[in-house]
Length: 156
Length: 336
Image 1 (spheres, rainbow over the protein chains, first blue to last red):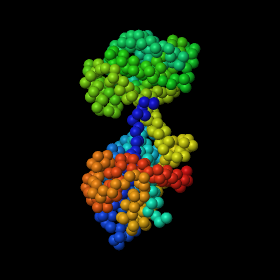
Image 2 (cartoon, one colour):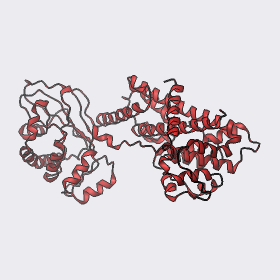
Image 3 (cartoon, helix red, strand yellow):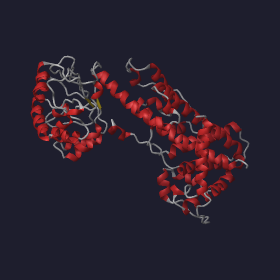
Image 4 (tube, each protein chain N blue to C red):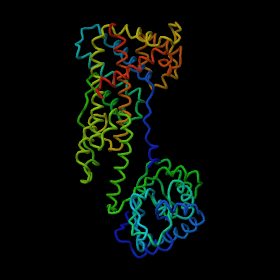
């Protein structure tokens, strides 16, 4: 089976690419809607969170990945609205014709994972695994970037 | 599409016994597969025979293909565990001699091709091949699974093609074999192939998620993965909350942060440097975004202009230290 692994490619861009995108989105955010304005804090949190996810999807190579495409599409659709995770997705036909020999516990777990990964509702399980791997890599990178930012910003 | 092999037909049995060379046996017989002459010969003969047989049987060419071979009495016991390779070329032979021989040559490296042993145990074997491409002009047979459309074009254009094509094609087959007692209908085989694919990607995921390698069982592993993703998402939420609390100072502090983090990167104080276009291409960033954020972005542009974009963080020793400690902080805070 070794040769089948050639298809799995979950390369992730460097950290600074993530940082660059995030900071650009943030600064963009602050130009559009200055933080000094009387804005509710929860609003600000949501905006920053959305900025984090969108910039992550952009840094991960826009539409190369299913999850980033789904994320960006969702963000574009409800522009100015909140990006929520997870979201219920429609079931597709291949889900219905699954064999009854599959492990129900596994399937349930995969279903939960499908709800976590953006755009996961439309993926087959093998694809879901691949996308999840990439998503995890990007997410941890984004967390690192944000952590660094928070560390740098918070008063010493 | 499927050649049912629970009961091997007479013709098939005859073929198998006569000169089918693709059956695998124990590793001890490996040396047989170093006789290319034998292979080309037998496969040439078999190619025609099996073609005829399949045509007369009115079978479509299976994308998922299983067959059974029944041998004589059992003196050499072949345990399922011993069989580690696929007998790959049965189907391919159907496609004609030219293709067959090249494929035989290509696949010999990784497959153990075993001679048929009359005294072997009754052994059920099957082979499943999902091929992206196997279209031949005279048979115009299409396989079910096509992973890569581009390669299909390539192949149909050059049917009696060079070995290079075949070499590149070799990676596209997925072989799944049924052990003794396993179901061999197309659904079961497809399901088994799917599960194999999933577990392979699971292994990949296992390396990514900390603490996942201690857990056995797919369900537990999936749970761990889910927990990890959730914790990461919560982390993002938490950090954006933190960022929001410090955000009143954010718009002017971003610049400071960059100045701080890229300490040892050479700073050239050119206020009017423009972000190099290749950077925008690399990052896939829309122009308007860059433009709208332009006013607040002078320090960043200096950094980008002063050093290579991909190394502007890694240049600074202190910066890398910050990253590394962050990684450790993250992992420890996850409680893994």
